[in-house]
Length: 289
Image 1 (cartoon, helix red, strand yellow):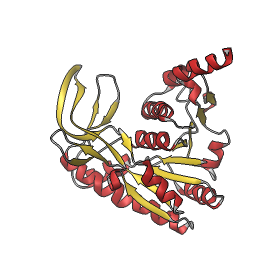
Image 2 (cartoon, one colour; image 1 turned 30 degrees about the vertical axis):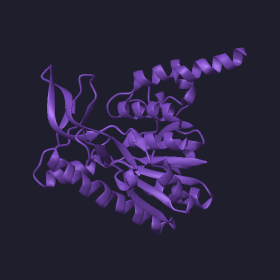
Image 3 (cartoon, helix red, strand yellow; image 1 turned 90 degrees about the horizontal axis):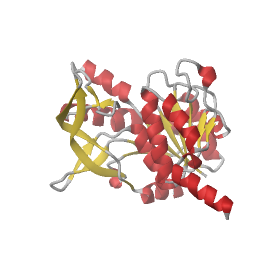
Image 4 (cartoon, helix red, strand yellow; image 1 turned 180 degrees about the vertical axis):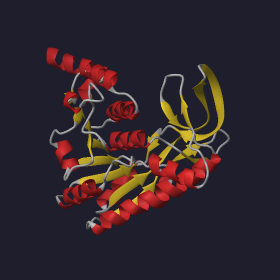
């Protein structure tokens, strides 16, 4: 079994339990790929440098970072430079032979660069130029499988390698949840998304309304209707992971003693491939036959 684990970058997320759990899984012979976010650390570093983080809203209502050239320099410094190195260091202290990789290494994460994005400002749709972002379109799974086969545990961070229209490449920002989703799909792995809440709640303010599992398209509609704020992108990433070939996606809390093991055992909110309409059609056809 291969497990892709994404540790959120919010200040409320404590990675200590997850790192010890990775060590236990690796000791038991499981293949683990660790990925991570870091938006909070990027924002804090920008502010220390006297810069204000810029967030924009798409016409569809999704809020995301606008990454200009200066922000991209900070992003490269913080994500693969500090946060990835810190996690690799911590895993070595847990007895894990960890290898830090950014999406630019060996063309690990690649896709077209978006230099302009559509945004909504003051109720009007506009084009904002100068962005350094992209959507991951390919994953070098051979590189990850080679690292895993050698007995090492990859720790993967964005940025990704953005393909320019004129040719060549530029390191650009990509959403960390969607990066984890792309990796899980490419490896046909289980994806565990660790965050600061115990799952997806029907009422975002009430933990008792946690959705235990979604196995059908109707279930998934309930999940999508419940997701708001930061959870919206996690649900979007979950769908992309399953479409790409992931075995399952679990959204669960990082703040537990064995968060990954617990998530795989049914804690959190589990999304299965049956939530995709095409998979549901295939299942129904197989049952009819």
